[in-house]
Amino acid sequence: MICVSIGRTRHKMMVAEHRALAERGAELVELRIDWLSRQPDLARLLKDRPAPCIVTCRRPQDGGRWKGSEEQRLALLRTALVSGVEYIDLEEDIAASIPRYGDTQRIVSHHDFEQTPKDIEDIHYRLCQLDPDIVKIVTMAHSPEDNMRMLKLVANAKVPTVGFCMGELGLISRVLCGKYGSPFTFATFSRDRELAPGQLSVDEMKHLYRFDEIDANTDVYGVIGDPIAHSLSPLLHNTAFHKEGINAVYLPFRIPKFDLQKSLTHYEWLGVQGYSVTIPHKEEILDHAQHVDESAQEIGAANTLYRNSESEWQATNTDYPAALATIRLGLQSSQFSSDELAGYKVLILGAGGVARAIALGLVKAGALVTVSNRTSERATELAAELGCQQISWEHRGTGFADILVNCTSVGMHPNVDETPFPESQFRENMLVFDTVYNPENTLLLKQARGRGCVTVSGIEMFIRQAALQFEQFTGRSAPLETMRETLRQSISAVKS
Ligand code: NAP
Image (cartoon, rainbow, N blue to C red):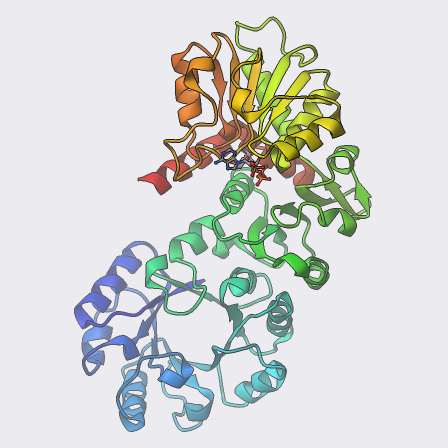
């Protein structure tokens, strides 16, 4: 069950939001009466309530906004109890002074906005002595270990326990507490109305992470990187799991640059079945894997870590086959005699990680590759390593190429009016592949089409690398069309 917290300064808005949430199917809401700017009128808030609720009145020391006296606060909580509200939230120090009454369930809570204290088990034990129906313990996460200590506490609790960590690092615990028996989790009406650090919106909790479908058997997957908050991988993978009816959840695991080994060791307890890997861990992840595919070994980087048939960690690189499959897709157009890459002249713009992976794949497939990069030393290094040609950035438009691949970030949102290639230099029937996927229709692709070129977008590569990961993770074919549509919709929603 997802409990949606409502914090509004006006009664009218609190009532309206309660109603709106009930209409959207909310099963439980938390009325944060400490947010109200006037003296809370509980009769007005609870009369004809459209969905069950928790009444909570937090003091500033517990992360709330209550400005009145403690006597007034206790009186309000007693009034809520007498009025028969479904749940009442009582902090540790007041729980004993407000005894059980009627059918109202008692949530005895502890919040720590600074840290996840060393003694959370002791705190939990004390809360359990205060006649709770539910214990709630919420702390700030500063490390993956904090999440693990919290989830282990929830898993071992004898009294139903809502336990999770706050902050960006704590996000995974807000979702995974359901797997370990937390009776509910908390979400907010929308992201811009966050009541506690790291809170997810009810839509994200319900439709992206599908909290209500998570149970003890749910498999866990995720993407590791830093930053990770804006990754589209959770959307793609969770949508694919749902479409295929797989009981799994995919989460963003923020892991700072130097914390990889330590963090992955902590997350072993979750039994994670597979990770997508992004910046800054693509190289270092090779050290964590027991097995590394030939492609990842050659590229020196992996974007996927999965459990192989022996349940050992295997690293692979799906960017590279996804990019080659995308180029072949373009070559299947009638202008080209063959979709075999051997013999085609390819100009690659860029010399970063993606350029390296794609250039290596093309060289191995027998294509005649030339690289060009703004910083010429990087292009020289790459060309020497792969045994291919190099052309200066100034002259990139002058050589002959059947295929042009943009592996720079030029043209990426928000710089959508930029392009890495001079418009006058396109050749009719050239294949132009832009790895940039946001926007889908980059200026490079628009100008190329205007000059009679065949184009393929970075979306095709992005969904293919995710689809290949999905296949490694689950052993099943990925719903490619669903993933493509999901990505397109999400990119156009961000723009609008
Ligand atoms: P990277 O290692 O940081 O490399 C960035 C490249 O872009 C470098 O070659 C850099 O040149 C060049 N560059 C940046 N700004 C430039 C400018 N203003 N003018 C000319 N060149 C410029 O990044 P990466 O990991 O290779 O990623 C590159 C792009 O690939 C990303 O931006 C992303 O859009 C795309 N990508 C697509 C997918 C997909 O699935 N479709 C997946 C991953 C990445 P210098 O060496 O001179 O700095």
